Image (cartoon, rainbow, N blue to C red; front, side, top):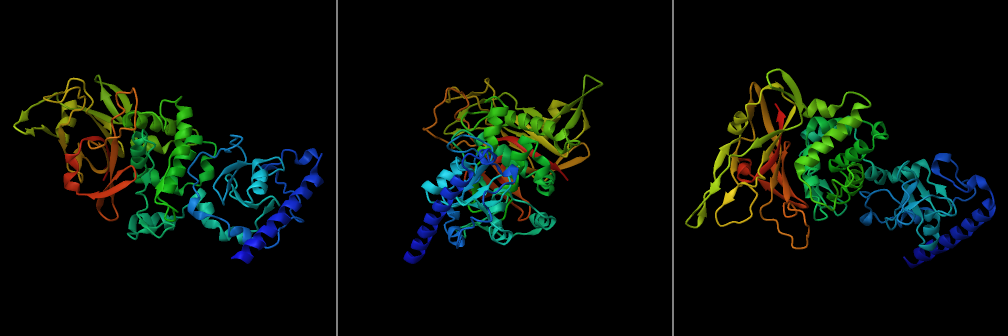
Length: 458
Protein backbone atom coordinates (compact mmCIF):
# COMPACT_ATOMS: atom_id res chain seq x y z
CA UNK A 1 0.00 0.00 0.00
CA UNK A 2 2.88 2.39 0.76
CA UNK A 3 4.44 1.72 -2.64
CA UNK A 4 1.09 2.27 -4.33
CA UNK A 5 0.61 5.58 -2.48
CA UNK A 6 4.05 6.74 -3.57
CA UNK A 7 3.18 5.71 -7.14
CA UNK A 8 -0.06 7.71 -7.06
CA UNK A 9 1.80 10.72 -5.63
CA UNK A 10 4.42 10.46 -8.39
CA UNK A 11 1.72 10.32 -11.03
CA UNK A 12 -0.02 13.27 -9.38
CA UNK A 13 3.17 15.32 -9.53
CA UNK A 14 3.54 14.35 -13.18
CA UNK A 15 -0.07 15.39 -13.76
CA UNK A 16 0.58 18.80 -12.25
CA UNK A 17 3.62 19.27 -14.49
CA UNK A 18 1.60 18.28 -17.53
CA UNK A 19 -1.22 20.58 -16.47
CA UNK A 20 1.23 23.47 -16.22
CA UNK A 21 2.45 22.58 -19.69
CA UNK A 22 -1.14 22.76 -20.90
CA UNK A 23 -1.45 26.23 -19.39
CA UNK A 24 1.70 27.33 -21.20
CA UNK A 25 0.54 25.79 -24.47
CA UNK A 26 -2.84 27.48 -24.42
CA UNK A 27 -1.88 30.72 -22.70
CA UNK A 28 -3.25 33.62 -24.69
CA UNK A 29 -5.20 31.33 -27.03
CA UNK A 30 -8.83 32.49 -26.97
CA UNK A 31 -9.95 29.18 -28.46
CA UNK A 32 -9.54 27.49 -25.07
CA UNK A 33 -10.52 30.38 -22.81
CA UNK A 34 -14.06 29.12 -22.28
CA UNK A 35 -13.67 25.44 -23.03
CA UNK A 36 -16.83 23.39 -22.57
CA UNK A 37 -17.82 19.83 -23.38
CA UNK A 38 -20.29 21.02 -25.98
CA UNK A 39 -17.38 22.36 -28.05
CA UNK A 40 -16.06 18.78 -28.21
CA UNK A 41 -12.50 19.94 -27.66
CA UNK A 42 -10.13 18.00 -25.42
CA UNK A 43 -6.96 19.93 -24.74
CA UNK A 44 -3.87 17.95 -25.64
CA UNK A 45 -5.78 14.68 -25.35
CA UNK A 46 -3.33 12.70 -27.48
CA UNK A 47 -0.29 13.97 -25.59
CA UNK A 48 -1.56 14.12 -22.02
CA UNK A 49 -2.71 10.56 -21.35
CA UNK A 50 -1.41 9.85 -17.83
CA UNK A 51 0.63 6.79 -17.03
CA UNK A 52 -1.17 4.11 -15.03
CA UNK A 53 -4.34 6.18 -14.78
CA UNK A 54 -6.04 3.06 -13.40
CA UNK A 55 -4.39 4.02 -10.12
CA UNK A 56 -6.56 7.11 -10.18
CA UNK A 57 -9.66 4.95 -10.55
CA UNK A 58 -8.78 3.23 -7.29
CA UNK A 59 -9.32 6.55 -5.51
CA UNK A 60 -13.05 6.56 -6.41
CA UNK A 61 -15.00 6.50 -3.15
CA UNK A 62 -18.34 4.86 -3.89
CA UNK A 63 -19.48 4.99 -0.26
CA UNK A 64 -19.86 8.79 -0.30
CA UNK A 65 -21.23 9.26 -3.81
CA UNK A 66 -24.59 11.01 -3.74
CA UNK A 67 -26.11 12.33 -6.96
CA UNK A 68 -29.50 13.40 -5.59
CA UNK A 69 -28.67 17.07 -5.13
CA UNK A 70 -29.07 19.96 -7.52
CA UNK A 71 -26.28 19.94 -10.10
CA UNK A 72 -24.74 23.28 -9.17
CA UNK A 73 -21.07 24.09 -8.71
CA UNK A 74 -20.41 24.46 -4.98
CA UNK A 75 -18.01 27.35 -5.63
CA UNK A 76 -19.31 29.37 -8.59
CA UNK A 77 -22.97 28.32 -8.13
CA UNK A 78 -23.13 27.80 -11.90
CA UNK A 79 -25.52 25.12 -13.15
CA UNK A 80 -23.86 24.67 -16.56
CA UNK A 81 -21.11 22.22 -17.45
CA UNK A 82 -21.10 20.71 -13.94
CA UNK A 83 -18.98 17.70 -12.94
CA UNK A 84 -18.98 15.42 -9.94
CA UNK A 85 -15.72 14.55 -8.20
CA UNK A 86 -15.78 10.80 -7.66
CA UNK A 87 -13.31 11.07 -4.80
CA UNK A 88 -15.04 13.58 -2.51
CA UNK A 89 -18.48 14.01 -4.17
CA UNK A 90 -18.16 17.76 -4.72
CA UNK A 91 -19.98 19.35 -7.67
CA UNK A 92 -17.69 21.62 -9.69
CA UNK A 93 -17.71 23.51 -12.99
CA UNK A 94 -15.77 23.16 -16.24
CA UNK A 95 -12.47 21.63 -17.40
CA UNK A 96 -10.48 24.61 -18.68
CA UNK A 97 -7.42 25.88 -16.81
CA UNK A 98 -9.43 28.49 -14.86
CA UNK A 99 -12.24 26.13 -13.93
CA UNK A 100 -13.16 24.86 -10.47
CA UNK A 101 -12.60 21.26 -11.61
CA UNK A 102 -9.08 22.03 -12.83
CA UNK A 103 -8.11 23.83 -9.61
CA UNK A 104 -9.72 21.15 -7.42
CA UNK A 105 -7.77 18.39 -9.15
CA UNK A 106 -4.47 20.16 -8.47
CA UNK A 107 -5.18 21.49 -4.97
CA UNK A 108 -6.92 18.37 -3.60
CA UNK A 109 -5.09 15.75 -5.66
CA UNK A 110 -8.45 14.37 -6.88
CA UNK A 111 -8.43 13.19 -10.47
CA UNK A 112 -11.62 11.37 -11.53
CA UNK A 113 -14.73 13.34 -12.57
CA UNK A 114 -18.03 12.62 -14.29
CA UNK A 115 -19.89 15.13 -16.43
CA UNK A 116 -23.52 15.14 -15.27
CA UNK A 117 -24.87 15.95 -18.73
CA UNK A 118 -22.86 13.65 -21.00
CA UNK A 119 -22.05 11.05 -18.29
CA UNK A 120 -18.49 10.90 -19.62
CA UNK A 121 -15.54 10.37 -17.27
CA UNK A 122 -12.40 12.51 -17.24
CA UNK A 123 -8.99 12.37 -15.62
CA UNK A 124 -7.90 15.80 -14.45
CA UNK A 125 -5.87 17.96 -14.65
CA UNK A 126 -4.56 16.07 -17.70
CA UNK A 127 -8.02 16.52 -19.23
CA UNK A 128 -8.07 12.97 -20.50
CA UNK A 129 -11.40 11.35 -21.42
CA UNK A 130 -11.57 7.71 -20.40
CA UNK A 131 -11.73 5.26 -23.26
CA UNK A 132 -14.80 3.15 -24.02
CA UNK A 133 -13.49 0.01 -22.33
CA UNK A 134 -12.66 1.79 -19.09
CA UNK A 135 -15.94 3.72 -19.15
CA UNK A 136 -17.82 0.44 -19.41
CA UNK A 137 -16.19 -0.71 -16.16
CA UNK A 138 -17.73 2.36 -14.48
CA UNK A 139 -21.16 1.86 -16.02
CA UNK A 140 -22.82 1.39 -12.63
CA UNK A 141 -21.87 4.96 -11.65
CA UNK A 142 -23.40 6.31 -14.86
CA UNK A 143 -26.59 4.39 -14.10
CA UNK A 144 -26.59 5.68 -10.54
CA UNK A 145 -26.65 9.22 -11.94
CA UNK A 146 -29.26 8.40 -14.57
CA UNK A 147 -30.91 4.94 -14.29
CA UNK A 148 -32.19 3.50 -17.58
CA UNK A 149 -34.54 0.56 -18.01
CA UNK A 150 -35.08 -2.15 -20.58
CA UNK A 151 -38.35 -4.05 -21.15
CA UNK A 152 -37.03 -7.01 -19.18
CA UNK A 153 -36.32 -4.71 -16.22
CA UNK A 154 -39.94 -3.60 -16.27
CA UNK A 155 -41.16 -7.19 -16.42
CA UNK A 156 -39.23 -8.00 -13.25
CA UNK A 157 -41.15 -5.31 -11.35
CA UNK A 158 -44.27 -7.41 -11.83
CA UNK A 159 -42.76 -10.82 -11.03
CA UNK A 160 -39.45 -10.67 -9.15
CA UNK A 161 -39.77 -11.07 -5.36
CA UNK A 162 -36.03 -11.07 -4.69
CA UNK A 163 -34.54 -8.31 -2.55
CA UNK A 164 -31.92 -5.91 -3.87
CA UNK A 165 -28.60 -5.22 -2.13
CA UNK A 166 -27.06 -1.82 -1.50
CA UNK A 167 -23.34 -1.07 -1.43
CA UNK A 168 -23.10 -2.49 2.11
CA UNK A 169 -24.89 -5.68 1.04
CA UNK A 170 -27.98 -4.68 3.01
CA UNK A 171 -31.28 -5.80 1.43
CA UNK A 172 -33.97 -3.38 0.27
CA UNK A 173 -37.17 -3.51 -1.78
CA UNK A 174 -37.02 -1.63 -5.02
CA UNK A 175 -39.77 0.94 -5.22
CA UNK A 176 -40.05 1.14 -1.44
CA UNK A 177 -37.25 3.57 -0.73
CA UNK A 178 -37.22 6.09 2.10
CA UNK A 179 -37.06 9.77 1.18
CA UNK A 180 -35.05 12.13 3.36
CA UNK A 181 -37.08 14.64 5.34
CA UNK A 182 -35.48 17.97 6.18
CA UNK A 183 -38.10 18.32 8.89
CA UNK A 184 -40.90 19.92 6.89
CA UNK A 185 -41.16 18.17 3.50
CA UNK A 186 -42.97 14.98 4.48
CA UNK A 187 -46.01 16.51 2.70
CA UNK A 188 -44.20 16.26 -0.65
CA UNK A 189 -42.49 12.94 0.04
CA UNK A 190 -45.78 11.07 0.51
CA UNK A 191 -47.12 12.43 -2.79
CA UNK A 192 -43.96 11.52 -4.71
CA UNK A 193 -44.07 8.04 -3.18
CA UNK A 194 -47.73 7.60 -4.07
CA UNK A 195 -47.38 8.76 -7.67
CA UNK A 196 -44.36 6.49 -8.20
CA UNK A 197 -46.62 3.52 -7.40
CA UNK A 198 -49.21 4.35 -10.04
CA UNK A 199 -48.14 1.61 -12.44
CA UNK A 200 -49.30 3.22 -15.69
CA UNK A 201 -47.41 6.42 -14.84
CA UNK A 202 -44.35 4.56 -13.56
CA UNK A 203 -44.15 2.29 -16.61
CA UNK A 204 -44.44 5.27 -18.96
CA UNK A 205 -41.55 7.00 -17.19
CA UNK A 206 -39.32 3.93 -17.02
CA UNK A 207 -39.84 2.99 -20.67
CA UNK A 208 -39.41 6.51 -22.08
CA UNK A 209 -35.91 7.58 -23.08
CA UNK A 210 -34.90 10.26 -20.58
CA UNK A 211 -33.64 12.39 -23.48
CA UNK A 212 -37.27 12.86 -24.48
CA UNK A 213 -37.76 14.90 -21.31
CA UNK A 214 -34.62 17.06 -21.61
CA UNK A 215 -36.57 20.19 -22.51
CA UNK A 216 -39.25 19.48 -19.89
CA UNK A 217 -37.55 20.54 -16.69
CA UNK A 218 -40.11 19.40 -14.13
CA UNK A 219 -40.93 16.14 -15.92
CA UNK A 220 -37.21 15.38 -16.23
CA UNK A 221 -36.52 15.94 -12.54
CA UNK A 222 -39.64 14.06 -11.42
CA UNK A 223 -38.96 11.13 -13.74
CA UNK A 224 -35.39 10.90 -12.42
CA UNK A 225 -36.68 10.43 -8.86
CA UNK A 226 -39.11 7.73 -10.01
CA UNK A 227 -36.36 5.91 -11.92
CA UNK A 228 -34.12 6.00 -8.86
CA UNK A 229 -36.89 4.78 -6.56
CA UNK A 230 -37.27 1.62 -8.64
CA UNK A 231 -33.56 1.10 -9.34
CA UNK A 232 -32.16 -2.29 -8.30
CA UNK A 233 -28.54 -1.15 -7.86
CA UNK A 234 -28.64 1.74 -5.40
CA UNK A 235 -25.60 2.43 -3.24
CA UNK A 236 -27.85 3.31 -0.29
CA UNK A 237 -31.50 2.40 0.40
CA UNK A 238 -32.77 5.98 0.63
CA UNK A 239 -32.97 9.05 -1.59
CA UNK A 240 -33.27 12.81 -1.39
CA UNK A 241 -35.71 14.85 -3.46
CA UNK A 242 -33.51 17.94 -3.11
CA UNK A 243 -32.93 18.47 -6.84
CA UNK A 244 -36.61 18.09 -7.70
CA UNK A 245 -37.80 20.29 -4.83
CA UNK A 246 -35.27 23.01 -5.67
CA UNK A 247 -36.90 23.32 -9.08
CA UNK A 248 -40.40 23.16 -7.59
CA UNK A 249 -39.57 25.89 -5.08
CA UNK A 250 -38.48 28.15 -7.93
CA UNK A 251 -41.38 27.21 -10.21
CA UNK A 252 -44.03 27.63 -7.49
CA UNK A 253 -42.48 30.88 -6.21
CA UNK A 254 -41.71 29.24 -2.87
CA UNK A 255 -45.23 27.96 -2.38
CA UNK A 256 -43.73 24.48 -1.97
CA UNK A 257 -40.23 23.78 -0.73
CA UNK A 258 -38.12 21.57 1.51
CA UNK A 259 -38.22 24.17 4.26
CA UNK A 260 -41.87 25.14 4.58
CA UNK A 261 -45.04 23.28 5.50
CA UNK A 262 -47.81 22.61 2.99
CA UNK A 263 -50.73 20.27 2.58
CA UNK A 264 -50.25 17.12 0.47
CA UNK A 265 -53.52 17.81 -1.34
CA UNK A 266 -52.38 21.25 -2.48
CA UNK A 267 -49.02 19.91 -3.57
CA UNK A 268 -50.61 17.04 -5.49
CA UNK A 269 -52.95 19.32 -7.43
CA UNK A 270 -50.12 21.72 -8.28
CA UNK A 271 -47.80 18.91 -9.37
CA UNK A 272 -50.40 17.14 -11.54
CA UNK A 273 -51.29 20.38 -13.31
CA UNK A 274 -47.63 21.27 -13.94
CA UNK A 275 -46.69 17.80 -15.19
CA UNK A 276 -49.77 17.73 -17.39
CA UNK A 277 -48.96 21.11 -18.92
CA UNK A 278 -45.38 20.13 -19.76
CA UNK A 279 -46.26 16.74 -21.23
CA UNK A 280 -49.13 18.20 -23.26
CA UNK A 281 -46.51 20.13 -25.20
CA UNK A 282 -45.15 16.96 -26.83
CA UNK A 283 -48.33 14.86 -27.07
CA UNK A 284 -51.54 14.15 -25.23
CA UNK A 285 -50.50 13.99 -21.61
CA UNK A 286 -50.57 10.62 -19.90
CA UNK A 287 -51.19 12.49 -16.64
CA UNK A 288 -54.68 13.59 -17.70
CA UNK A 289 -55.37 10.15 -19.17
CA UNK A 290 -54.66 8.51 -15.82
CA UNK A 291 -55.94 10.94 -13.21
CA UNK A 292 -58.56 13.17 -14.81
CA UNK A 293 -62.26 12.37 -14.63
CA UNK A 294 -65.43 14.29 -15.55
CA UNK A 295 -68.44 15.27 -13.49
CA UNK A 296 -71.86 16.53 -14.49
CA UNK A 297 -72.96 19.58 -12.51
CA UNK A 298 -75.93 21.93 -12.71
CA UNK A 299 -77.77 19.52 -14.95
CA UNK A 300 -75.70 19.74 -18.13
CA UNK A 301 -72.32 21.30 -17.33
CA UNK A 302 -69.31 19.00 -17.51
CA UNK A 303 -66.21 19.73 -15.45
CA UNK A 304 -62.91 17.93 -15.15
CA UNK A 305 -61.51 16.89 -11.79
CA UNK A 306 -58.20 15.57 -10.45
CA UNK A 307 -59.57 14.31 -7.16
CA UNK A 308 -62.77 13.94 -5.14
CA UNK A 309 -63.05 15.69 -1.79
CA UNK A 310 -65.22 13.99 0.85
CA UNK A 311 -66.54 15.77 3.92
CA UNK A 312 -66.75 14.11 7.30
CA UNK A 313 -69.94 14.81 9.25
CA UNK A 314 -69.54 17.29 12.08
CA UNK A 315 -69.06 15.39 15.32
CA UNK A 316 -68.71 16.16 19.00
CA UNK A 317 -66.62 13.59 20.80
CA UNK A 318 -67.25 12.73 24.42
CA UNK A 319 -65.14 10.81 26.85
CA UNK A 320 -66.84 7.78 28.33
CA UNK A 321 -64.88 7.17 31.49
CA UNK A 322 -61.28 6.77 30.33
CA UNK A 323 -62.19 6.05 26.73
CA UNK A 324 -62.85 8.42 23.86
CA UNK A 325 -65.58 7.20 21.57
CA UNK A 326 -64.67 7.90 17.92
CA UNK A 327 -67.43 7.75 15.28
CA UNK A 328 -67.02 5.52 12.23
CA UNK A 329 -68.22 6.02 8.66
CA UNK A 330 -68.16 3.89 5.52
CA UNK A 331 -66.22 5.30 2.57
CA UNK A 332 -68.99 4.36 0.13
CA UNK A 333 -71.52 6.26 2.23
CA UNK A 334 -69.39 9.41 2.19
CA UNK A 335 -69.16 9.20 -1.61
CA UNK A 336 -72.91 8.68 -1.99
CA UNK A 337 -73.65 11.67 0.26
CA UNK A 338 -71.85 13.95 -2.21
CA UNK A 339 -74.26 12.82 -4.96
CA UNK A 340 -71.57 13.05 -7.62
CA UNK A 341 -72.76 12.43 -11.18
CA UNK A 342 -69.87 10.88 -13.07
CA UNK A 343 -69.51 11.31 -16.81
CA UNK A 344 -66.10 9.63 -16.80
CA UNK A 345 -64.20 7.90 -14.02
CA UNK A 346 -60.40 8.10 -14.14
CA UNK A 347 -58.01 5.16 -14.28
CA UNK A 348 -56.68 6.20 -10.89
CA UNK A 349 -59.21 7.79 -8.57
CA UNK A 350 -57.75 10.10 -5.92
CA UNK A 351 -59.92 10.71 -2.88
CA UNK A 352 -59.28 13.39 -0.26
CA UNK A 353 -60.95 12.93 3.13
CA UNK A 354 -61.17 16.44 4.51
CA UNK A 355 -60.36 16.23 8.21
CA UNK A 356 -59.24 19.82 8.75
CA UNK A 357 -62.32 21.56 10.09
CA UNK A 358 -62.46 24.31 12.66
CA UNK A 359 -65.84 23.19 14.00
CA UNK A 360 -64.74 19.77 15.29
CA UNK A 361 -65.27 19.65 19.04
CA UNK A 362 -63.35 17.23 21.21
CA UNK A 363 -64.11 17.25 24.91
CA UNK A 364 -60.92 17.73 26.92
CA UNK A 365 -58.82 18.60 23.86
CA UNK A 366 -58.66 22.31 23.14
CA UNK A 367 -57.80 23.89 19.82
CA UNK A 368 -58.10 20.68 17.80
CA UNK A 369 -58.80 21.12 14.08
CA UNK A 370 -58.48 17.47 13.16
CA UNK A 371 -61.56 15.30 12.76
CA UNK A 372 -60.40 11.89 14.04
CA UNK A 373 -63.40 9.95 12.73
CA UNK A 374 -62.62 6.50 11.38
CA UNK A 375 -63.40 5.89 7.72
CA UNK A 376 -63.88 2.20 7.00
CA UNK A 377 -63.08 0.72 3.58
CA UNK A 378 -62.10 -2.51 1.88
CA UNK A 379 -58.68 -1.91 0.29
CA UNK A 380 -59.28 -4.68 -2.26
CA UNK A 381 -62.46 -3.24 -3.73
CA UNK A 382 -64.26 0.07 -4.04
CA UNK A 383 -67.21 0.06 -6.42
CA UNK A 384 -68.53 3.24 -8.01
CA UNK A 385 -71.27 2.61 -10.51
CA UNK A 386 -70.03 -0.31 -12.57
CA UNK A 387 -66.32 0.45 -12.04
CA UNK A 388 -64.20 -1.38 -9.48
CA UNK A 389 -61.07 0.00 -7.86
CA UNK A 390 -58.42 -1.25 -5.45
CA UNK A 391 -56.31 0.83 -3.08
CA UNK A 392 -52.61 1.24 -3.99
CA UNK A 393 -51.54 4.14 -1.75
CA UNK A 394 -52.92 5.61 1.46
CA UNK A 395 -51.58 8.90 2.86
CA UNK A 396 -52.37 9.23 6.57
CA UNK A 397 -51.76 11.63 9.43
CA UNK A 398 -49.05 10.51 11.83
CA UNK A 399 -50.59 11.04 15.25
CA UNK A 400 -47.44 10.01 17.10
CA UNK A 401 -45.10 12.48 15.43
CA UNK A 402 -43.45 15.06 17.65
CA UNK A 403 -40.44 17.17 16.75
CA UNK A 404 -39.56 19.95 19.17
CA UNK A 405 -36.83 21.15 16.80
CA UNK A 406 -39.41 22.41 14.32
CA UNK A 407 -40.52 25.97 14.87
CA UNK A 408 -42.94 27.71 12.58
CA UNK A 409 -45.71 30.28 12.65
CA UNK A 410 -47.69 28.04 10.30
CA UNK A 411 -50.71 26.42 11.97
CA UNK A 412 -49.94 23.21 10.09
CA UNK A 413 -46.32 22.89 11.20
CA UNK A 414 -47.14 20.03 13.58
CA UNK A 415 -48.94 18.01 10.91
CA UNK A 416 -46.89 15.04 9.80
CA UNK A 417 -47.73 12.54 7.08
CA UNK A 418 -46.75 8.98 6.26
CA UNK A 419 -47.74 6.72 3.39
CA UNK A 420 -48.93 3.13 3.16
CA UNK A 421 -48.13 1.42 -0.14
CA UNK A 422 -49.22 -1.86 -1.71
CA UNK A 423 -46.40 -4.24 -2.57
CA UNK A 424 -48.33 -6.04 -5.28
CA UNK A 425 -45.61 -8.61 -6.03
CA UNK A 426 -45.46 -9.84 -2.43
CA UNK A 427 -49.13 -9.08 -1.66
CA UNK A 428 -48.10 -7.00 1.37
CA UNK A 429 -48.66 -3.48 2.62
CA UNK A 430 -45.68 -1.43 3.68
CA UNK A 431 -45.77 1.79 5.67
CA UNK A 432 -43.06 4.36 4.98
CA UNK A 433 -42.56 7.14 7.50
CA UNK A 434 -39.63 9.20 6.21
CA UNK A 435 -36.81 6.60 6.42
CA UNK A 436 -38.67 4.14 8.67
CA UNK A 437 -40.41 1.05 7.31
CA UNK A 438 -42.79 -1.54 8.66
CA UNK A 439 -45.24 -4.03 7.22
CA UNK A 440 -48.89 -3.56 8.16
CA UNK A 441 -52.03 -5.66 7.93
CA UNK A 442 -54.35 -4.62 5.12
CA UNK A 443 -57.40 -5.24 7.33
CA UNK A 444 -56.17 -2.59 9.76
CA UNK A 445 -55.48 0.19 7.28
CA UNK A 446 -58.77 1.94 8.05
CA UNK A 447 -57.77 2.46 11.70
CA UNK A 448 -55.37 5.22 10.67
CA UNK A 449 -56.57 8.70 9.82
CA UNK A 450 -56.62 8.45 6.04
CA UNK A 451 -56.23 11.76 4.26
CA UNK A 452 -55.45 11.00 0.59
CA UNK A 453 -56.15 7.70 -1.13
CA UNK A 454 -55.12 6.46 -4.58
CA UNK A 455 -57.50 3.88 -6.03
CA UNK A 456 -56.49 2.00 -9.21
CA UNK A 457 -59.10 0.68 -11.63
CA UNK A 458 -59.27 -3.13 -11.85
